[in-house]
Length: 42
Image 1 (cartoon, rainbow, N blue to C red):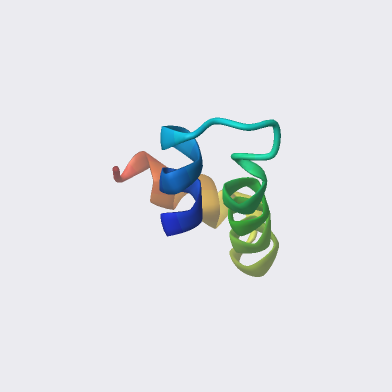
Image 2: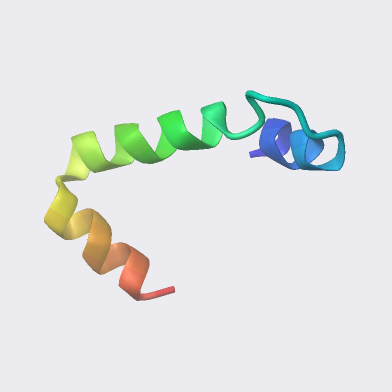
């Protein structure tokens, strides 16, 4: 997350790659249904 926040301050082409990979791994680990239910809580 820190890497993404730093990238937002100094934008570049790959700024969201780490965030995207983190979200993908969470979805893969817990399943899409649980992931979307968890996101809905926020």
